[in-house]
Amino acid sequence: MGLQEGVTVRRRPPRSAALARSAHGKFWGGVDTFGAMVILGLGALRHLATDIVLRRFSWREYFDQAWFMTRVAFLPTVLVAIPFGIIIAIQVGAVASQIGAVSFTGAVNGIGILRQAAPLVTSLLMAGAVGSAVCAQLGAQTVREEVDAMRVMGLDPVQRIVAPRVAAAMTVGFLLNIVVAATAMLTGYIINVGGGSVSSGAYLSSFIAFAQPTDLILAEGKAVIFGFLAMVIAAYKGLTASGGPKGVADAVNQCVVIAVIVLAVVNVAITQGYVMLVPARIA
Image (cartoon, rainbow, N blue to C red):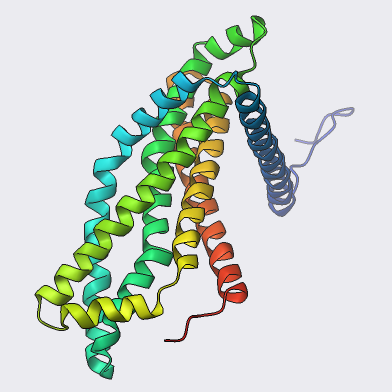
């Protein structure tokens, strides 16, 4: 049978064109999300600075959130830091034995943990444990319209909710990094010295000879930046959650994935900049 007169036949666009439009939309959606996160982070820092100076910062909320984040992340941090210390100690000790550089085990192990392993574990815990918990908390408040109620009452959610959590995350990240570094370095010391591969004096002297104060500054600076970024991402995804409990669950998943990717990229950038700008110490 032929087509009736006056009937317009619409052909489906090619699959490649549909995919191109979808990719284009996702790209600009990602740009919008990035811009919104930047605005949220800058707003939180602005409120944090002005509220502290004007003595109107919510210290009670800050301490409550800091304690909440510590309870959520402390035990997982220790449990993750110990295996990291064991793996690094075993691998470094094996390679050092092969090339006859056992006396430098302490320097390689300690500096590797201080510069890379400790901030990396801290970033994973801040993104996975702390970030997901805060995102779920804020997402639940958003879908229950509590955040909208704050706006109706003339309260700024960034000032009341985000800024204290950002400050708490930066503080907890700073402290967690110390716990991770101390735990992993102590584990490496026990594995290498306790195993008889190197003496205690040689292990400590090599670390002291090659380590420098900027290594600690780098590690703590990374931890503070990671805490800030993880909390901004968690707060943004929580405040933009929609669709009930399923929407909150989706926001938590997206929060963890985005935070892990962003923190990994930032870690590489900071490390590369440090290597280029700070000269290595020669014993």
